[in-house]
Image 1: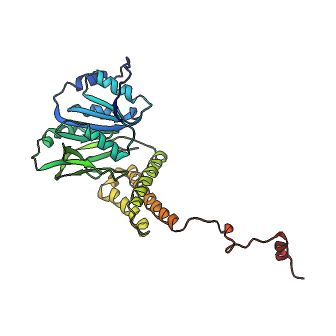
Image 2: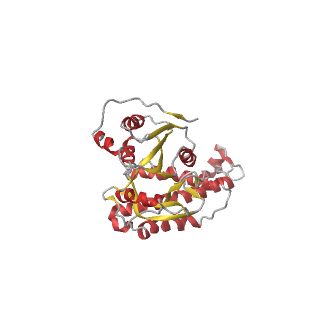
Image 3: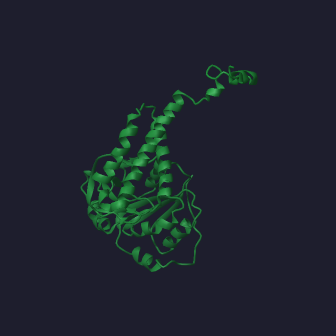
Length: 313
């Protein structure tokens, strides 16, 4: 059950107070941004700062225990048009669908707490929202922050994803457990200007834990469909994933940090395929220790073992 959260007021203000006070007074667009979060205090402020053009910002929290609520309260006190709601975790797709349904504006922007709109995308928003009625949504590029490099340049970007959608013309696919996306009812165009900046610079040991979690969700999602899948994908998909990121998306331009990013994607792909294979294998042949099967391992008494060790004179 959802509820509006009454945040505890924090009289202390960060160095960004003046910047916040100026931001909320700028002209607004008929746009609701929606964010799901849990313990996102280190990242959320810059996300909110990039949304100063929005008439409404909907933030759905699933139980933060850090300073997220207090951070949002400070922005609300400064006049930012934020609605802060609590909703128990429904899964990624379910949580984002709930947040989408709380929006009231003609256009809705899906953005994660660790993302922010770059200057070019902010400048492009008015034109995107004035698109003809035949366009129901916009795909937007995303650029990652790489440790040892910074944000990738504009010509090195991830796949463009549908993030901007008209009211009533799209919904999240609730069957997806990870990498959830909006399914649009109509034509979707690609914004040629601007990007979402993804800032979560995790060291490789932490990033691999994240890939392990996501690959488990992806594997379980596939297993739930009941479809068969051959092991050949385990050999083909990881190098193909690496090639797509490193060559097609241009991460080779970012030196060693780009190589690490592409390899991390390949690891995610391998873990997904390996987990799918092993889950099928466990269903076909549950693991049994040979020593627990008399027909495969004949237990011998100590006397039998002594005879077996006795040498012939």
